[in-house]
Image: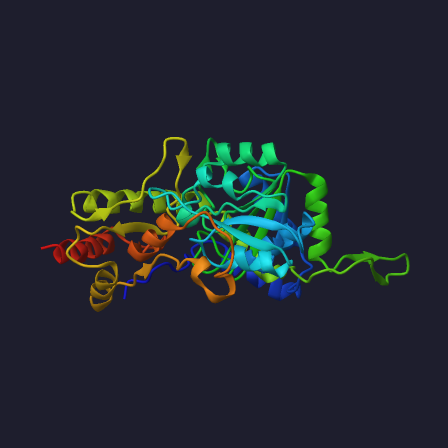
Length: 367
């Protein structure tokens, strides 16, 4: 089986983790925690980074750091992994769904202003599968209406928008280091911001709002959260970060190979890259149109029968029971893409011969 997207372990992971074990620094206090935050913030060019136990925790922490809560509304796409939507509910706020663009699969910034009400406090753009949202227009809208922007960059580490790393354009950016992401710590996430005060607030909340008194006791001024990453996982993150540029190069090179091999096939729409962005292609994604001889699900089945793991696009969150009564802008494009989209194998370790094998299966399906 050619898997959809698995980790790449090729650097100092064993060495750094062994050091944690040898020195007994295995929990959330240790040199690799600080090192990972510092090196990651430098890599994306953000002033402050706060490491967390997963990407969902980073998103939850972002909302809490900006004091978003009951009575507030947050605009978010429905075509997304459910985490950003769930975290809106975690803090007691209400999600409002925006439709997406057909070509890029990300939030349609032309559909945002119609959703804004006096209750709206924030927008969460999700850079789904690696392509950035139109951040210039989104930030203009946010400024006009005095709204926060929390970038869900959990799928777009390595992607750039007008020369800036995704996650560093809004008020806060959130990343994931799950096992299928560009770099991984097994489980883990990161919150970044260019506002020092917001960053300190996030760190304070993530570490149980702990203050050490003069005699060494711990005092907690308010409710806090145990969102800390263990030193063991941070050590792995430091090792992974050392190879990130090579991983990005391979991801983009593999996407180009896919594009070349699939470009002439009738009924298949390939992913795009707008002129002012760099798409890391976290997952290489295609859309199956009506002209194709197979439906999306038939093609997924055929790939599976030939040893290739493929996955449909995310199911629309606005159709799921907890969120079916939420307000939205009309989900025509979201619903269409959710019924047509396929993610193809995209591991860093994917070989050219495997991409050729995958594309041969897809090509033969059209004969």
